[in-house]
Image 1 (cartoon, rainbow, N blue to C red):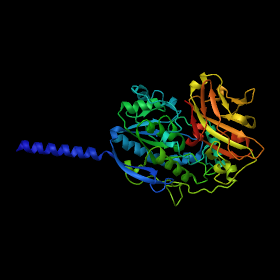
Image 2 (spheres, rainbow, N blue to C red):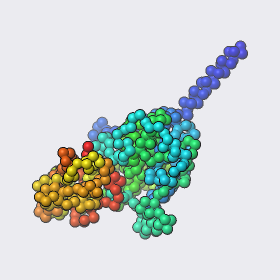
Image 3 (tube, rainbow, N blue to C red):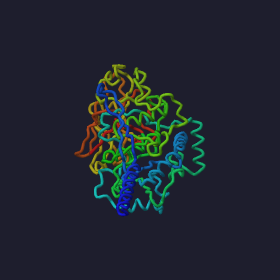
Image 4 (cartoon, helix red, strand yellow):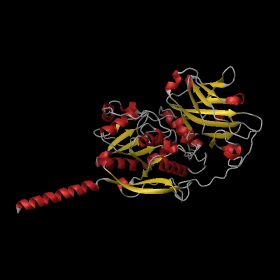
Length: 471
C-alpha cells in the first residue's frame, strides 16, 4: 500500500512538474500580414498562436543608448524603458538569454563579464554569408514600396529645443550628432547570465551555442537599426531564426514634415506594418508580462495601429516636394500616375548600391550613362563625380566608396528641353564586372543642389525599395 501511495504521489508530482513546465512556455500571438485573397493590392492581418520554450529563446536589446541626438526620441524611449526592463527580467527568470546590443559602445564594456562571455563564445560551425554586415533588404522586400521617407534623419524635434539639447550634450563632452557611449542605465545587465555584443558574428555564435531557435527584438529605431543591424530583424529572418519584433517596445525615426506627411506615431505604425508584411511577425509585451501592451502618453490619436496611409492623390506639385519611387526609363506620365507628361526643369534621381570590396580591386570603377551623359551630373555619397575624357562615363574614386556597405548614388539630369521619360538605367562597371541599375529609383523635380546628398549615411536614410546589390 505504501509503495502504491509513493508511486501515486511521484506520478502526480511528475504530472504537476510537466504541467508547470508547459505553462511556463511563452504563449505568443504572432501577428503578420498577408495579401487579401479578394484584392491583391490589400493586406489583411493574421494572428497565429505559438508556444516558445524560454530556453530556446533570446531577447536582443537593440541600440537602447544612454543618449541620442533627438530629444523627442529620448523621451519616447525613456517612457517605455521600465516596461522593457521588466520584460527582460521576466524572460531571464524563465530561462531565456538576454543579449544587450548597444552599437558602437563596446569600449564601455571592456572587461565586463557579459562582454567577455560574448567574445569567448565558440565560433559557430556555419556562419551565414555577410552576417557581420548591415542588411538593407531581404528577398521578401523586393516588390515592397518602402512606406516613409526617412532621408532627413527622421528627427522630429522642434528646432529651438533641438538646439538647446545639442548644447547640453556638448556641455557633457558628447558629440551632439553621435552622443551615445553605453546602454541606457534603465536597462539592467546581469553579469552572471547576459551577453553584450554589437557584432553580427558574435551574436550568431551565441544563438548557435545556446541552441536558440527563437529571437525577440526590442529597442530602437525600427526603420533603421532594428531592421538593418547585423543582429537585426532582416539578418535573423533570412538566416532561419524564428524572429519577432515586440512592437509596443520600439520606436522609429520619422519626421512628419517628410512624406507621407503623417504624425510620428502613424509613421511608426507604417514601419511596423512593413515589418509584418515582408520581414517577420510582431508581438506585444503583455504576452510576456501580462496586463496590457504599452501605450505612449504622447500618442494622442483616436485611430491607432494603422496599416496604410490611405490613398495619396498626386499632382504636378507633389514631385517638387518629395521623392517618388518609379521604374528607371518609365514615361513621366506613368511615373507621375498621370499628373505630368513632360517637364522642363532638372530631374533628380537617387538609389542606393551595395558595393563589395572585391569590386575595388578591379581597375576603373565607373558609371556609364549612355548617350545623355553630357546632360547629367552624378554624386556618390555626396562626392561629385568627374567624367572620363570622352565624356561617356563618370569616374568613381575609391575613397568615395563605402565598401561592403550601402552607398548613395544621386544623378541630376539638367536638360532644359522638355522631358517625357525618366533617365534610362545606368551601368556600374569595374574591370570585367558590371551591374545594370535597372529597376526602381526615386525621382524629384527641382533646382536645389542640396538634393545631391542626405544628412546621414545611406543605410540609415534610404528604404529597401531602391537598393541595388553588386555581387
